[in-house]
Amino acid sequence: MEEIRYKEKMLYSRELHPDDTIVQAGEVSIGRGGFAVIAGPCSVESESQIMGIAEAVKEAGADMLRGGAYKPRTSPYDFQGLEAEGIKLLLKAKQETGLPIVSEIMDAGNLDLFEDIDVLQIGARNMQNFALLKAVGQTDKPVLIKRGISATYQEFLTAAEYVLSEGNPNVILCERGIRTFETYTRSTMDIAAVPVLKRLSHLPVLADPSHACGRSELVGSLALAATAAGADGLMIEVHSDPKLALSDGRQSLTPQQFAELMKKIRALTGALNA
Image (cartoon, rainbow, N blue to C red; front, side):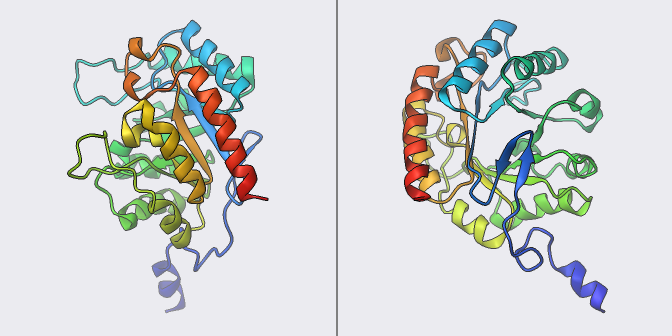
C-alpha cells in the first residue's frame, strides 16, 4: 500500500519535493532566484541572421539563445525551418558567443541531431505528444515545455510528469498564453499561471510574452508583469528586421528594443531581490 500511495503523488508536486528545483543549462541556473532571459529569432533563417542576433542579444544581457530549426506551422505552405542546417548554425552561434542554445524538437527520431543543444523545447502543439515527452524524459537534457493553448494547469503539469516519470528531473515550465474569446492579441497571457504553477510545483516557471500577445508593442509590458509575478525567466523573440522575418515577425523585438527592455528587466529583478 505504501508503494501505491507514493505513486499517486506526482513528481512535479511540492508534496514530494518542497524545495524549488534549479535546472542547469550550461553555466546558466534557472529557478530558486536564478532568473534567465532566453532571446532570439523564431526561426533560424541564415548564418548571418542568427550570428548577428546572437551577438546582439548577448551584448544586451541575454543568458541563452533561442532559435527554431524545425518549425511546426499551421499551414503546410509556410516556412518549415532549415532543419538540420539550422541546428548547425545554432551550434556555430553557440561556439562564437558562448550562449547555451534552446531549440524546439518535434520528432524523437531527431534526438541525435540535438545532442549538443542545451535545452530541448517542447512546443505548445506537442505538449501532449506523450511519445515525444517520454523520449526526452529518457535523456538527461533540460526540457522546456510550453503550455498548450487550451491546457489547464493540471494538464500542463501532468505533461511535465511524463518527462519526470522517465527519470529526467530537468524540466522547465513555460506559460505562453492560452486561447480565449479575445482576438486582438494572438493569445491571452495568463499571468496567474506564474504564481499558481510555482505554488503547485517545484519546477522553474518561465513566461513567453512574445507568443502570448503576438504584438511587439505589448511584449515589454507583459515581460515586466510576468517578472513581477515571480517568473524564473523569460523567453523573448528578437529579429534584426521583423518585417522581413520568415515567421512571427509581428511579435519580434528589434535588437535595440530588446536592449532597452533588458535594462528594465534587470532593474525590476534587482528591486525584487533587494
